[in-house]
Every structure is written in structure tokens, then in C-alpha cells.
Amino acid sequence: MNPLITSPPQDHLSPDEGKKHFSITDPVNPSTPIAQLLIGVVVRKRSIHHNVWATYSWEVVSVIEGAPELPPWSVIENEQDAEIYYAGHTPLRLYPYETDTLKDNLESSNPSVYVFLREDQEGEFPALIGATVCTGEAQAHAGIEGDRVEAVAMSPLISAWVHRFVSRYHVEQPVYKRQRTQNRHNR
Image 1 (cartoon, helix red, strand yellow):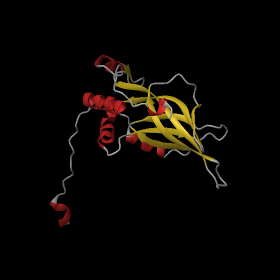
Image 2 (tube, helix red, strand yellow; image 1 turned 90 degrees about the vertical axis):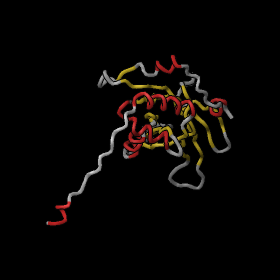
Image 3 (cartoon, helix red, strand yellow; image 1 turned 45 degrees about the vertical axis):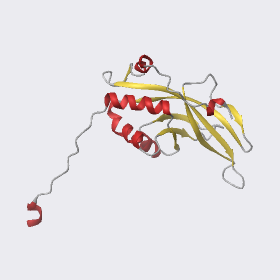
Image 4 (cartoon, one colour; image 1 turned 120 degrees about the vertical axis):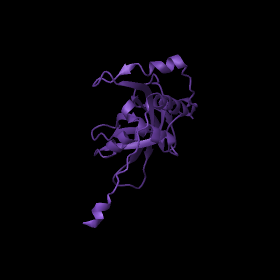
């Protein structure tokens, strides 16, 4: 296997390096801090036999922290009926108003990074649209025709980074239940 895919992620961010991920602001609302981490996306193109509509399929294999010095859609490994590609890089962005869904993702049985690919009818490769760890954004993209949302396991480094962000910005909101009145049944 290629070390690009199998190397275990390490949480190598010191507290000072971790702070720099919180240094950019939301361009729409400059008072809103956001965190950003660049990730690379690795995909597999697998041959499909005995299918009249498609000759191959695409599958996101993993995401890696940082952006390797490879051009997008570089072949990084050949398998028997498949090729592994470095699809390119995209930023993961975290916003304070998303902490509820970020927390839900972290607490799920399979914390995931959601990668968005769009089939390109004219090109050989799908377009890498972006990625998120926000479950709400992933659901929104799932409703866009032509977009594919693929979940891949969140690495320990990304999980720690998201956890630090949630710890810093999450504010528990009280849940208010609507009370039924007795008069409603007496009408």
C-alpha cells in the first residue's frame, strides 16, 4: 500500500499551532471566527464488469490532513481492477453556529468526514466540490441533483481538531417543550 493512504494520522498540532486554525474569519460576517483545516481526498476508480450503463465507479477511500504536493487526479496506486487517485485538496471549515451538528457527529458511532463529488459528464474525473464534518451541510448536499456525498471515517487528528473547536465554541441550548393546555380538550 501507498504510505499516503496507510500512514496513521498523528495529532502533531501543538497548542500554538492549533490556535492558528482559529485565526481566520467568516467573509460574510467578519465577527464570526471559523476554523479551517486543509485536507486531501483519496478516491478509488473501480472497474465494473457486466454493466451496460457504467464501466467504472468512484468511491472515496480516505481523507488525509494537509495537501500533498501532487497534482489533482494523480494515480498513487494501481490495484487489480482499480486505481487509487489523489483527487485534490479542499478546506474543512468549522463555524460556531454549527457546533450542535459537529457535536452530534463526534458522538455518533462512526464520526465521519463527508466528501462531495459531482459527476462531470464531459470529463473523465468527478469534480471535488468540498468536504465537511457538519451533518447538516452533508444532508443539504445530499439533496442536490448530481452531487454525491460520501462518508469516510474521521481520523484521530481531525476528530481532536473538531473536538477542540466544539469545546471552545459550543453553548448548550435549553430544550423547551410545548405545554398542552387543559382547555384544548374541553372545547
